[in-house]
Length: 329
Image (cartoon, rainbow, N blue to C red):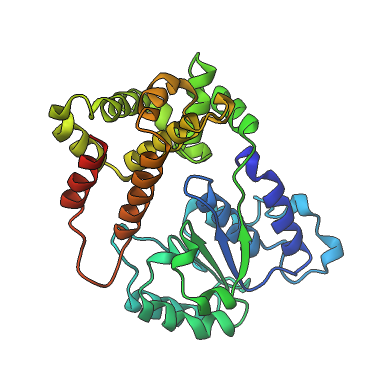
């Protein structure tokens, strides 16, 4: 288990050992914290034969899960008949998928130690799917437990929230993550680059690891340099436009650049910069002035909100981005 999850694991397994964990748990937090691995660990602990049918004073937190019983071995092998995983690469989790799950949970456990369902990216459930899950969340059959995992819990229906025990996975201490990145062999020789990488990934350890190991930081510096030069070199418009639309995180890079530039334009200390290794680019962008930076930053935030999944007509992201970029030239 990841070092930043040690305390959370201890707290949750203690509740399991004391038989005080709710039957519906919502693990929430930003992407890249290891919520999936945590969810599987908790599912394993719930199914472990050493946590069922015993008095809580006979079970120690360290023995949850034991890792040796038949149930734990089946979980490790990915063949436990009472562990049900819902995951998808599609845009949504359908109502049929949830109905099938609720039917399975209503049946008796094959190993007699309860059943556990893990729903990854629970925010992907359609409204019909979420409504189909409500009764099961409120009155699970037998010893069933449901773990919902979400990086965007605000997209879940309030009725889902009200029926779950929420558990926020906090963003870990930066020093802990930086030490872990060094142990993983992905940290660079530049402390400023490592800190910046962590900042642009919103403190996410796993996303920062992938970011550094895949060499994405070079692209970030190139793109932000082009953004800063755009007002002097309008011929860069197409390159900046395609670069920003290439991945949603690129917009986050630009947002951080504008925020740092705004701080510098207001005369604030460089100690508050998020892009620690890009002070020169931030100072270049700060020449736009505080008033203009505030306006275009607000417009960028509005544009990002328009890109969120909606029921209405899709937003022409490319056209709106072109219009926004003309404001910084």
